[in-house]
Length: 472
Image (cartoon, rainbow, N blue to C red; front, top):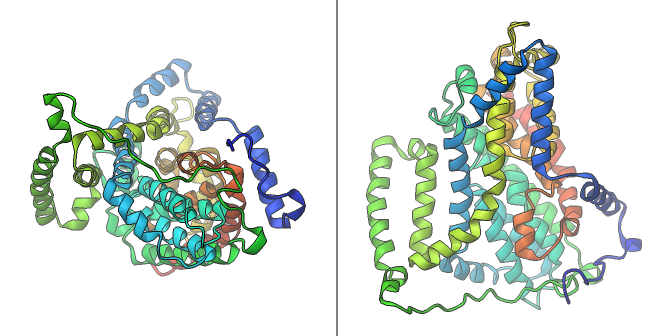
């Protein structure tokens, strides 16, 4: 059965009130929401209009747009490599064998859904792209176990929880990594915050406690919300092909192919890389070394190369990973231009747009309520601008200025953004696309379960952001 011809997995009459709300929201979003790049362009035009209203000269705006367009090239490349490196590791043969072993752990369908949620969220602390691919492949492997009676939709939603709930509190957090790297920060942000080390963001005890609480709660919700009995819809019911992924055997056809198929070259490169990594960790310490995005990506890429064993296998995985970087590559230059326009001081008013926005936050928030105000704002904007790193570049100039003016903890301000920004990912189809491609599902198949997670996670996140801020 083809994907287009598959039957409706759950008759409308059998949907609960919560499921009806979630499916209705998804149907609306699929009908009315344009591509994420459209929101980038609309945001740019809105900022331009605001600059014009403040008396800025059109030519000055155009010059600022062009000057800021390429300001994020290093960070853009770093974020693209985060995606590629995570995918390469997850798609390696040893990882495939690990997935096979992990698929043997659960004893029933509900346990399997909770297990996928745990693996996805735990791996997202290391790399969000790794969590998507690993969670998707684990779901497919579990779906092949006839004894589980696994609901493929619920397991697919669980595989998405790494990106939809916890990734921004881990090592691939765009905002935390940006703040820890002076060379990657735009001047508009660096002038306000300076460098904020990871020890003050993702490795804060309060941040790690919040991440642990969110993980435990999401796993429990996944377990208790998993359909049972005749409400289960398996991959077969949905018409999804879950046959084992078989790599086409390749053979050497000419003498020059020896280099591509031999494990010697990857091993030699890995040994060279090990020397560099040892030097970095011994001279800077593990935390400072991993704070550098270049070192972080370097480690993941070298691990991926070693796991694939051959140049041919490694390059095949890289080729498959590149399309997932398209949004980063085309959107981040526009984010850089928007950041420049937001912080550009208009001659007529003597102030920038970010100055007025930061003053607005200062006027409506206190040091005590700052986490809630910024959390709600970031979560709302995150649905319209689904890019953790790009959106941070837009928000940081005025959010961090407000935090500075209110004497809030600067590192916790970053974590407020991280935790709140991840919430709309649960119902935004943009970031679901790579996972849906692996699973053969559509957004409407999993968003009902993701929406359930959002209803519980949103108030919990806001409570944690407010409560833990009081301990700093």
